[in-house]
Image (cartoon, rainbow, N blue to C red; front, top):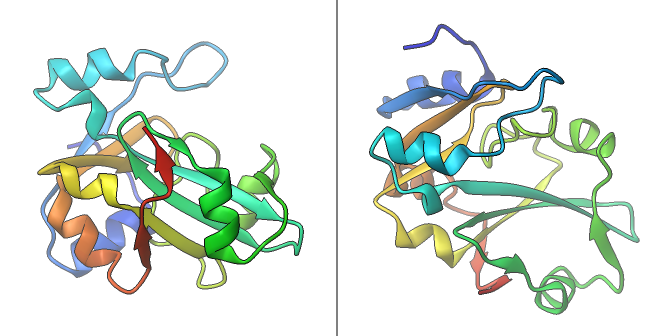
Length: 163
């Protein structure tokens, strides 16, 4: 296993949750490779099992993270209604670390600041194993879907995407 350290790994270890660290090769410009699906398939993981952590900023200035699996896109109307916000947009590249404590490409749906509201889409329930950001660019974490959902207990869960 790669020797990386992050609040995500600390949380998983403190809860005795089994996980695997997956190295994601970075391109020359230090961005994760674009063909993550091929890498996951080669490791025997479902490429659609990646739980993306999408950060939104509301007109009120509040940030929200949506954890979503599969290829669905955010349903803006549903999100605005659920959050009781008139306007909502994707967080800017430099706003993501401010809101989450992690850089774009490494943001997990767990081990986040308490001030960040987290929503989880029901799509996460469709996978026995999921892949999430590790908190460290160039690495992801595979774990059981039910373990991730247990860590997300207490956050709002709903249908927040269009398929």
